Length: 134
Image (cartoon, rainbow, N blue to C red; front, side, top):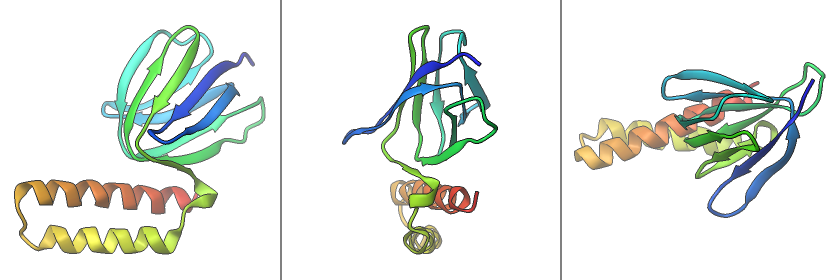
């Protein structure tokens, strides 16, 4: 199977850079799969699992992304996100605590801005917990 270059970057670092055969992620419009030769494409990604296939096996490496965007060009695919971590590196206790704190804040009848911030934190925590179980 043909490969293409993938870079996953955060404000702090290059999380992943290498040749892959396929990625699967979730955009605001739904799931998308990218393989070599994909048409140019840009989309927002939501907190979700990012699945990466690095060779012809059936195995995907899975990471939790906190949102961001994906940019597919003929030369490479770039995922830009504020936070990303491999499924096996997720601190489940910390993610569960973040989920509980966000749920409490949502129930506190805070301002609209605080509610939206808590809602985003809840989505990220739930995503991390979900990805950690895969």
